[in-house]
Amino acid sequence: MSALTDNWKTQIRKGYLDLCILTLIRSRGRVYGFDLIEQLTRAGLPLKEGTIYPLLNRMTADGLLGATWDTENVKGHPRKFYALTREGSRALDEMSEEFDRMVRIHQKLAKG
Image 1 (cartoon, rainbow, N blue to C red):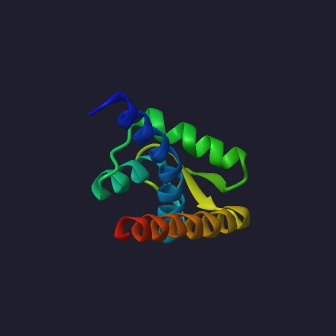
Image 2: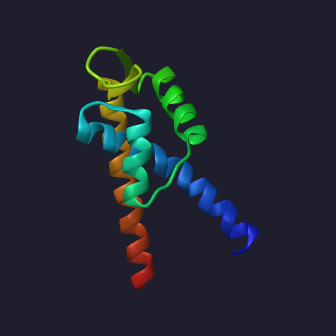
């Protein structure tokens, strides 16, 4: 694979990961970081802790996610759970619409 293709894939993946993370959180209601890693890996998007936690922190700082610690209902150590905020839900809707629009454009162009 060329450096150009690698760079393109890196850029595409950044926005796509945000979309997938928000989508997964919406579908599960609330989720903790390691569970997100496992779910995304099973879906074909393997991530490392060094990738997911900065994204979750940024999304929380941006107001897309709310984070709460659960110390009583989990086995083992406390876990930080993430859930969509109202703003996060609106952002996810907009991101999904834009992603779908881009896919439709690509399909249209590919068909000629």
